[in-house]
Length: 170
Image 1 (spheres, rainbow, N blue to C red):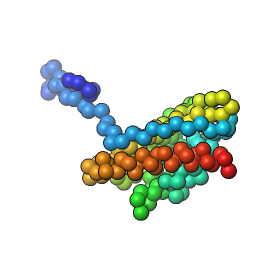
Image 2: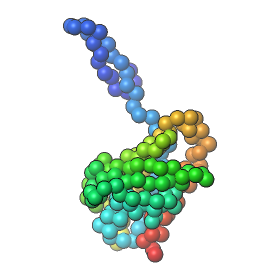
Image 3: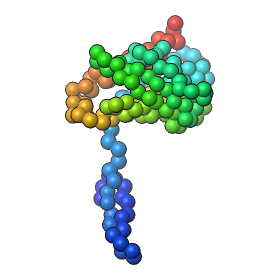
Image 4: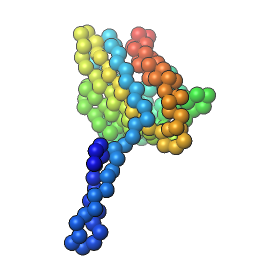
């Protein structure tokens, strides 16, 4: 069986398990951008990894706030309003992986969309190289129009990283 995992299901006591394929999660779209920011790694990581700052650098986010009192790190949650065409979509993000000054992974959920954002940071010369990957999965009929949305979603990704660079220039 190619491409997936398998799980054993027994048909009864002492019987050989039946192997059922489990398909890996499908990603409808992957956005990937890299940008150099002429600021120290520690500053860029602290600002970017705290998704409450997303509205300050991502033009596709109209508002962002941390939920609760926990500092940025594994388990921290954020509520964002994300611009989608002429409307705004609420999304909740949670940090699921964190390596200080190196990497942060956030999983986002909205009514019709799921996202996994992985942001990696590397010291580069006198600044920081930010490597941002967003895997997007639509959860309903939207997945059928993904090919039509692809150019607009790519522009959103490009603008987000450009916004991050510009936030440090101000």
